[in-house]
Length: 179
Image (cartoon, rainbow, N blue to C red; front, side, top):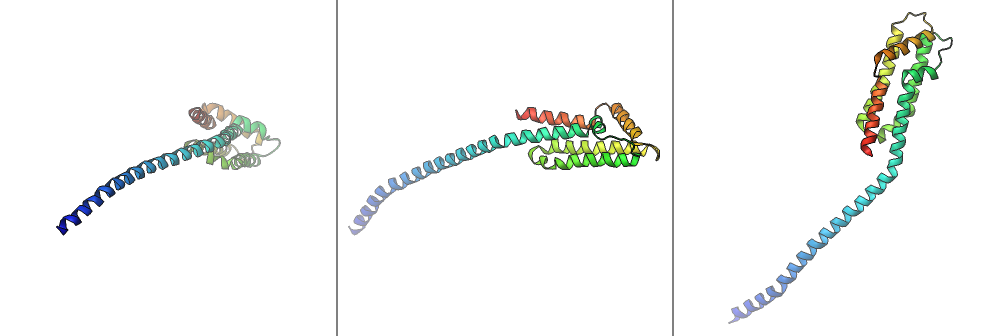
């Protein structure tokens, strides 16, 4: 008889505790799901607010890189940096400094654009320096800066698609994908 009493108490206790435990598990799962959804919603709101703030900065970076590419293109560069009475070597150094200065001024923009666009900008800059150096190397030592300027312009026209134009096209394509 005492075994039955203990067993009855155990079963009664189990009958009252089991539903409570089951309800506790269900409530825990529901609250966990709710809190996860709330975290996701907050993160989404923060991301949207961040993107809203970053959009003008990214657009400014695209604009500045487009301006950089235009300024280091041969036609623009040669108009801005006058040869005057400089020697070929003096003019070459001046052109290289101008390209380097433009590039360094916009170096921070790489943070706001894709790696592909930045690689294209770096490639365009290197190609322009290489073009200028190659043309200068092909000319006589006593050549004047004005002759170097004309030779660079002629070579650029012969190239067809300049690396700066290619990079500008990639930049425009990325902007179009963003919007």
